[in-house]
Length: 156
Ligand code: CUA
Image (cartoon, rainbow, N blue to C red; front, side):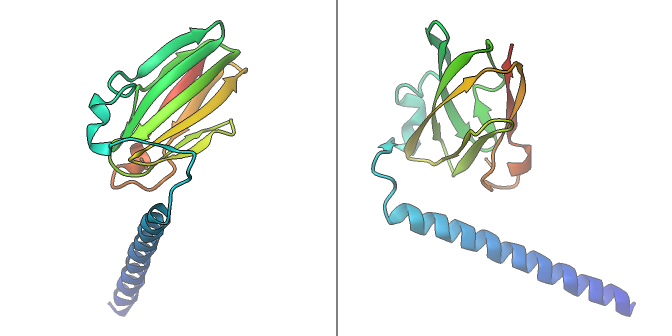
């Protein structure tokens, strides 16, 4: 019985520590955001993402011979559009924003790794040479479903 008590104490301490860490991270993000977002970033009203072009029509669009534009919204806990497909050798321009909290956009096997914040438009470009299925993950803690927030980019 005494051992049980000790375990409980450990778990309590651990979960309290986790809460403190999340609070610190959130606090830091808020603080950093308020101190001034990068000036080269375009802003958007996060309440009106659905009505604001180009985000009123998220999706993938071919804009050149080997060039695609992906207009994407991130929201708890999904990417819209999901399961993107592009031919090998494509250059893809991602234009992204968040509809709620800060999310991450990380594509395994590439250097793509961006923070997508509500109120800001994030633009990044990546060339996909190698065929395969690339895992897209949210790497910013965004709530209870954070671990489930993922999709794929298929390069054919
Ligand atoms: Cu979205 Cu974590």
